[in-house]
Image (cartoon, rainbow, N blue to C red; front, top):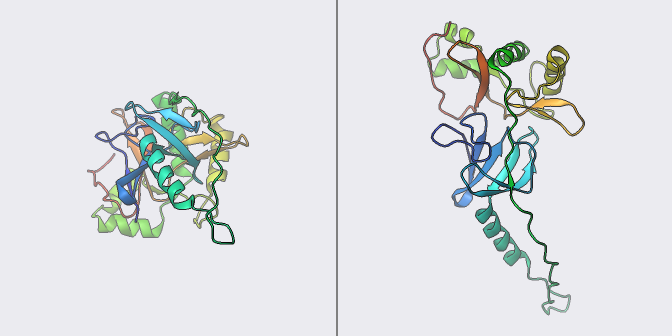
Amino acid sequence: MSNFRNVSKSEPCPICGKPDWCTVQYVEGNTKLHYCRRVLGCSNIISGTNGMNYVFLKQTSDGSCMYKEESAYMESRKEWEKANGRNRCANGRRAKPKSPPVKQPPAPQPAVSVTSLDNGTLDAIYRAFLKKLHLQKNHVRYLRQERWPDQLIIHSQVRSMPPGGNGYYYGKGRNLVAKELVREFGSLKGVPGFYEQADGKWNFAGQSGLLIPLYDHERKRTNTTIFLPFMKLPRTESIS
């Protein structure tokens, strides 16, 4: 049984140090898997902002990089080797396992985060981004159940995050949305949540859920955050 949580100011992402956009997953044994959507270099071992080392596990389908705390990774690796190291021959006698070659672990690399663009540019890009998305009916029902007035839903510009891969979405897919934004603004480097794929094409990270714009003190859209349907959604006052 696993459980996802968004990072926060009290518990920021240990990879990039930011309080939003990234996610932590609690798996069996109270082990944490960290999904960073800003540090996408995916090094083998990196030094987190909290001073601990983290091991890169894989890049997920939505572009996030999954990390695990080094000591927890080594412990789970030992358990796996113990459970899978009992090789037997056909005659029932235990075969002596071959000793794997000893490799020196790579030195931890510092996490490198791309500097964000200025708030004015981010506001223009996020405005265009939100216009290309829509709000699904099931998410509208969910917001109403959370006692969001219809006017607040409209003014907040809440949207439904398109699923990664071939998931159903009544609207444009992620690749097309990113392609149109690149055509309008050029490179999306420095826009939180967007990343460049190995083939040079741009995409945006994040699980399917409710996409909520974040504003600065001048009412400029400077970021977005994702709330999954099973998370408690905050209700704000009217947004002009």
